[in-house]
Length: 85
Image (cartoon, rainbow, N blue to C red; front, side, top):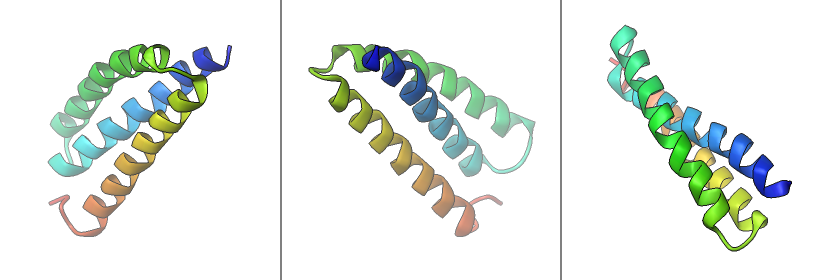
């Protein structure tokens, strides 16, 4: 059950963080939002597969949350440095 939660919740966080980063790098506009959403969909399935392929549920949680946090920090840095132009 823990691995299923890691796949669903952790995969969603990872996919949304990746989509937000792409949107932040592309700037304002509907094209950036669409690109971010499409990237999020493309990242969600491999994240779920990876959660079930790891040795333990704790490793799945750690990997997905660590990657999500890293992407969120990069998104914040991209927004703060004016990369959104």
